[in-house]
Length: 306
Length: 306
Image 1 (spheres, rainbow over the protein chains, first blue to last red):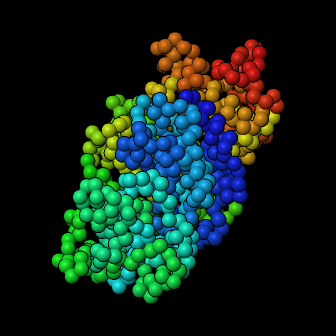
Image 2 (image 1 turned 120 degrees about the horizontal axis):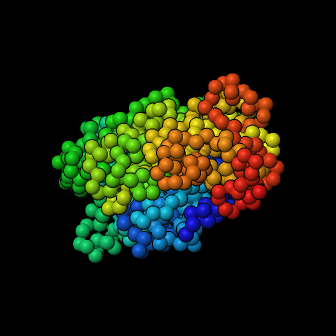
Image 3 (image 1 turned 90 degrees about the vertical axis):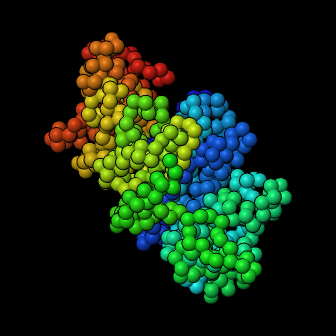
């Protein structure tokens, strides 16, 4: 495959818009950031890579699936900040065996995800090498209403997750939809104190949020929403479904905290959100409540309760 | 090497500033774009990758050299648009053999380049895999005075290059400094009509600029500034030094056009710039003037003069 053929195809598929007056084709792309966000607000930036045999497997996954996942991982970070994605840039290191039609399918997967996320692909870089496929995506976003950091959780907050957790390896790690609309809705009806997306699993990601906020948490095990995929995996490997929900990762669901008063609004708004516990003042301490028992949090390195 | 150790080091070295109120550490980084640029102007974006054995060679180059080159390639695109870099994001796929100290040296190389370019590293992603090193850099820039595109060249313009060309393989492809300050200065004293950076060599890049502008050019061979490295290479391989200046690539110098009247200001300002020819109305036609002879442009695919 000639890189110039792929570039020519990319240029052709790039189109000008009010937000992207200068699309792919020059030394840099030019975007006009929405006035609202640019006045007093932050411009949010992220870079994330997706590697063959690390984040996907070229032998088993289609190029459309891979492209979609690469972009959606980055857009999930936009959701985590309650940001609206504006533009993404995509860099691809293609293995020598990749054909032009295959590379186009990869970019179509990227484009599908970008379109669903209402953002434009404004930059692309491609190279061919004798190594495995690597895709890197950078995203530019604007706060939908206000940016939500990991560091804002307060003692007394309720702790929530969206959707259901665990077993994403059965397919959802490729097909998930970033929670952009949900995150925006949350910031419209509540004051979200802290938020992140669950990429490495609740067991690893919750301690990160607590650490950034300087707080602890009590989590009620039976309130953790377990995905049917976690139950399916459990029947195969004998691990408890709860373990999968806590430890599997790649859920790309939202983990967030808000006041008890705001939490009451969640039910009324019929949002796909579960309250799984509360924030405490005991820095980095996580207590997992199992009926009446206190159990250790399933990952080491923290001051476990109980 | 544990990725978490490298991330912890990266987080620690990230610092808040007026431009970067939200550095590395959350799901996205947050920057405040300068008011001037955000009001009516473009936010400029670029992504670019640097791959082992394609853009550098891990067996021969130091991690500092590699990190510096990866960032500087992206900053050279900022120069090409007459933009000031604001922020860069860096994604690194590390080979398994890389140690933590080695990875830190790589990032120090990146940081040196970012600091010289007066911009902040605001995002980082690292992963380890059993393949070769890949570094991807995304840059966010603002027009210094106005953004200069490739498409603005006009018949009658003079054609200019900065610095001297050829033989960069002898070392300059690693150690070059992006022409950010020069590009800014040019837009302050002139109206630059079209500009790009020379990454693939004048022979390939000039046709790109002409094509985007819908014009042609006459180039005077003896006016092309030849770097001493091109002469050194020439003595080794018997190729003419001019050939190296035209075809070697990785010069990262500026190629630009402006009116004859503005060109007069270049000498007065004592800028390191050479006038090498002029823009004509003959679309995509390049005439290379060699004393009295017209010679074909050294790359096919175009309507050569002569």
